[in-house]
Image 1 (cartoon, rainbow, N blue to C red):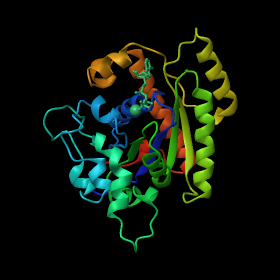
Image 2 (cartoon, protein in one colour):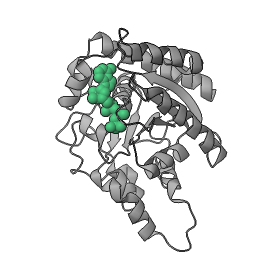
Image 3 (cartoon, rainbow, N blue to C red):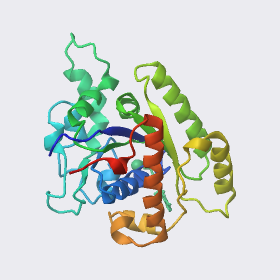
Length: 284
Ligand SMILES: Nc1ncnc2c1ncn2[C@@H]1O[C@H](COP(=O)(O)OP(=O)(O)OP(=O)(O)O)[C@@H](O)[C@H]1O
Ligand SMILES: [Mg+2]
């Protein structure tokens, strides 16, 4: 692998559970990989949502846990298309999540020298530093309720992509996430940008969907990624098969929506980070 990319590290978030974080991470990553970009997903979830969704057994590889503990080099631990037993696209790589992340905080505390005053939640920063340059995008798939990995993602990311699906606490979750971004900007990551808000599982006939769309169009106007993704059975079906819809339904209208959303995502990034558009980047 060559260190030739201008890497952007994007946290995917909303601390609420089951709001579409992993779905959005996987499908956007696939879309971007298809569009010629190099993408790494770092799975920070004890439930290893992204890892399982990509058809990889979380117990099979050393991953995020060992890397964060400093026991493993991130570039060695990354899973690629060259590893057997699954079908990752060539430009989509993964650092696997696992159940062991449950012990992360305790193990980091036990390991820490009494002379080391680095805060625990800065644990992801040196890992990202080693990985910068190898990818166009590094996506951090965050867990719903593990404070250390979530805060570590906020501290290490360049930008945050919020996700929501129309369910009871969606709006509250977005408000809390916005508040957290403000706080992180005050405490340790002043450059963290909100880069977009991606909405999934919309069914325009339901009251919750209409309320959520009306709310985000008003409060997050310039951030909402269009198109919003409609509710469709192809998403849980692909998830059950541990595949992306880019593999199971490459020609479906929803898959096309993710391609369009990925383009919109790049346009937003170009705007918020004052960068050239990604399609001008030479990947030669
Ligand atoms: N567009 C969609 N259509 C239908 N179902 C969807 C859609 N988007 C997401 N879902 C479903 O919503 C559920 C939650 O999605 P997902 O696992 O991506 O959320 P999450 O935020 O990562 O959850 P967790 O917090 O548990 O990690 C899944 O069952 C998924 O299949
Ligand atoms: Mg998840």
